[in-house]
Length: 507
Ligand SMILES: CC(=O)N[C@H]1[C@@H](OP(=O)(O)OP(=O)(O)OC[C@H]2O[C@@H](n3ccc(=O)[nH]c3=O)[C@H](O)[C@@H]2O)O[C@H](CO)[C@@H](O)[C@@H]1O[C@H](C)C(=O)N[C@@H](C)C(=O)N[C@H](CCC(=O)O)C(=O)O
Ligand SMILES: Nc1ncnc2c1ncn2[C@@H]1O[C@H](COP(=O)(O)OP(=O)(O)OP(=O)(O)O)[C@@H](O)[C@H]1O
Ligand SMILES: N[C@H](CCC[C@H](N)C(=O)O)C(=O)O
Image (tube, rainbow, N blue to C red; front, top):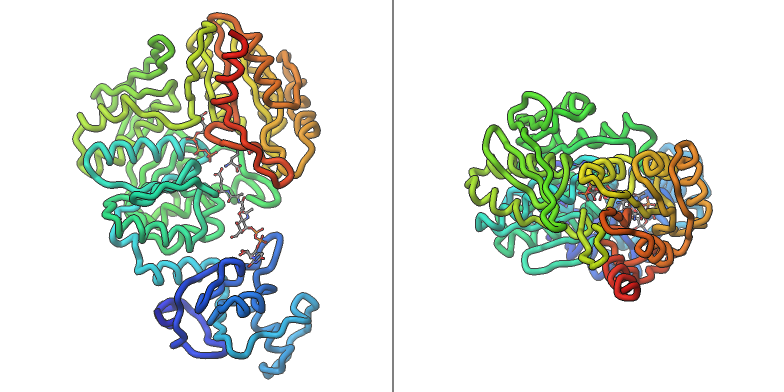
């Protein structure tokens, strides 16, 4: 494809070379550049992609996309501009390859998304793309919608925290919302392999970093907003977090929103789409009522009604009903038969979300991905309603993620569990003991009983050995993850398998 075709409608300036340059691929990372690539320079939080132009050229890049500010600085250094600007040391030694075509734009992340959409021939026009945003419930709701659509006979692609399902191909997810170039590539593959729908999680970080620009969303879903993702690398405060979430509803044709959430109005105030509300507590377009929890020999589920019609979902608690109602609303919009929806919801299972681990010890053992205060409170309150003899929870907090989570989760566990085992999650580049100390500070604000054990396997062994018949035990925070991330190493850690091994040992 020629370069010009990637920038139609984008205010881009040709700085050197030709608009007719032939482009064979697009890359945001110099390491992924191949012959005739367009290399897109991103000014990141850690590094500046503009520093890698030379490397990209050596790998065969035919063109590169730079930020306007960068071009002005470097051009002034090379005498190409009439009004030289101040030299900066950052690009002092950088010599731009003369044979390379260079285009500049104001924001390369944003332009990358649109250029990628053009490169992959706007795949979202050939699919119905459904985007789910919210602090909690994205993965669960996405799986529910996918399962219902598939049951109705529609081939459906999926992009989210657990995996990417692209036609016949399935791969482990690296991010909740992939980078723009990857998203467009995956959507193209989905369209080419006959998918009618694509269901994708749209994170606030994805919206902020323009990963989902260039997608024509048919439908957007807002699940809820809770305090999370605040920190130097994510959002500066809740207002910013809410702002980015709200952008989805300026990109989609039809929006579905949880009216019970305190942020509902904020999220939809500038919405340009048609809006439909859902609720479990008040009058709404789609309203759930008569919620009843069930436990049939460890098979947890919930019965409920939607606008008077009976449904059941194979997951516990009000929060599962919220997710199910969102999924029902989406699927009813597409005219899917109520019976198909009903049947599909009865057998939903999402890896690592309230996943039951069978055992002979007489307790209920669950793995759950709760890794912030909002989800931990939800799962503990929900499980309390099953009247356990004793409610146990084991968790840690990830390093390199919002530090506020730590104290908050400590406080929630202390308040809602009978006994907490504080341990390690994915410490990444932090010391797990330090993370645990902050969790403990939150715990100490309550009367909660707890034990600290840094080795997660040993901590699990401790809790699984202590549990008694009638108890409920929750292994929280790692859900579907298959590894523990420590100082850049991904060490195999399959909580499900480890729990089974410990249980076998204890027998
Ligand atoms: C905090 C954050 O979102 N960081 C994202 C950001 O990183 P960054 O700004 O630090 O990038 P950088 O490392 O400085 O690199 C700048 C540029 O130089 C390029 N580069 C770098 C090195 C090199 O040799 N050559 C080269 O070209 C890089 O490819 C990049 O384009 O830009 C990178 C490239 O676009 C992303 O990969 C990276 O996501 C990281 C992996 C991440 O962990 N993000 C998390 C917070 C995230 O996005 N989470 C959300 C939500 C999760 C949830 O809802 O719970 C998600 O959607 O997953
Ligand atoms: N609607 C909901 N409201 C509150 N908590 C929820 C809801 N749905 C799920 N949870 C809790 O949050 C955990 C994560 O759920 P899920 O993966 O569906 O959310 P998510 O938005 O994809 O989360 P993340 O962004 O962290 O991947 C679940 O294991 C459960 O404990
Ligand atoms: N999407 C979440 C996942 C956190 C999971 C937890 N196990 C951790 O590693 O902190 C995040 O990136 O913040």
